[in-house]
Image (cartoon, rainbow, N blue to C red; front, side):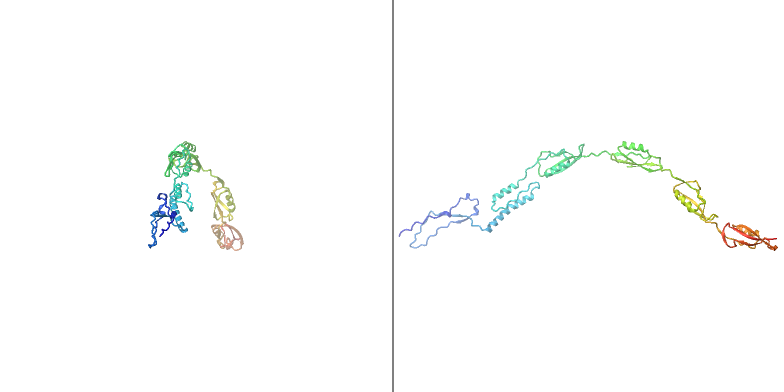
Length: 396
């Protein structure tokens, strides 16, 4: 029996392997055992030939084809692995560091590229140096340091330099700045002038007090007040004596000013005037008036007396007393009819009346000298001092 022809050379194109060191990520490949050729079924007509040149051992295979869903999942994991550390770094970085550009979410970015970007972003900015600050004002120095985000402490000292000028700095200019650097600035402040003790000037004349206060470095303000002290005498001062004040403080002096001479008014003659006219004249002169009524033979409302008298000098606002007549008093006339002339006259005169006699002839001897009539009649009310006329019989 003829031998079967030799089998064709096996096609090893799918079985070609690469050395382990040439595979960058060996674990991403699956390893399978190489299939061995199975012997043919034993029968009388089959001859089994052992092929010695068939490769033995395991076979490396590329990963199976990835679907779209699995590819997107792998890209998501890769982005999380890159963005989470970058976010933590951005949250903790110093405010002065320039913001890093966010990683670009580009499909196909490799792990090596992402690692390089992260390393470059986390690089700290270059350190700067302390600027020259002496001679600047405090505001100018602060502005320079704030641009460098540097903390500032200020120490003030007395100096002849302008107020607020930077005299010293620490660290010195040119030294390197770091995140924890604190720059101490020594700044000039205004020197406090010595205080002045206020001298006592009360009781002095104005010229003496002013000279003394100005020699002490104080200013003076003068105000006049009514006082019984001699004119130009310092009555009071503010601030008080021996008080300590700043130079150029104003001291207020109250200086005595004698009251002006009172204005006098000569009282005019008012007796005989009507009360209303007397009051008008007094009011026009700046004087007041008071009034007292009195019974008088003068017409009612007539000024019968005044106090003080004419020619008296009074100050403005003083009063003059006016005695004004209310007219004569009215009294009851006694009834004297039937009395003899002598008795009637006596009674009427005692009541305040003047008596006037009128004769009436009679032929009866017993009627001689008897009052037969009177006017006004007895019992009537007339002003006191009025004249009462009586009619008397005369025999013969």
